[in-house]
Amino acid sequence: MSSAQDEAILQNARDTIDSLYDLSQLLQTGLDKNTLSVCVGMIEQGANPDTLAAVIKALRREQDTIKVQQ
Image 1 (spheres, rainbow, N blue to C red):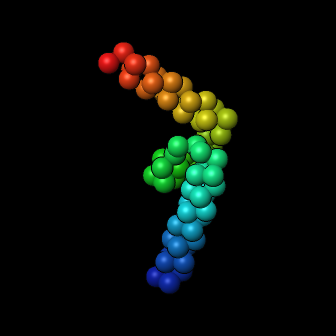
Image 2 (image 1 turned 135 degrees about the horizontal axis):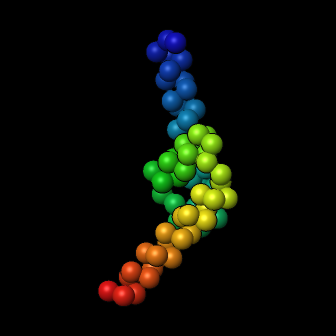
Image 3 (image 1 turned 120 degrees about the vertical axis):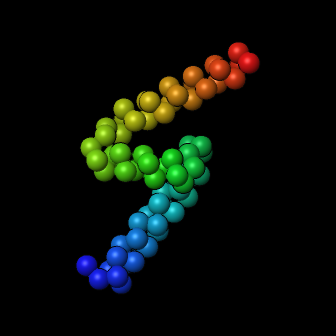
């Protein structure tokens, strides 16, 4: 692949993440771009989106519990 093609692919990926991030902000998911990018990568590798969402929610609940205990 040429350098121009590689750059076009990278730019397309950036644009996609930016669009997903904008949607994420509208939906008030609380996910930053890095976390969103990791989630997209996991889903692309075959992770179940519903399970991933459940894990994120569970981690947030755990984080809230820890904050309350401190």
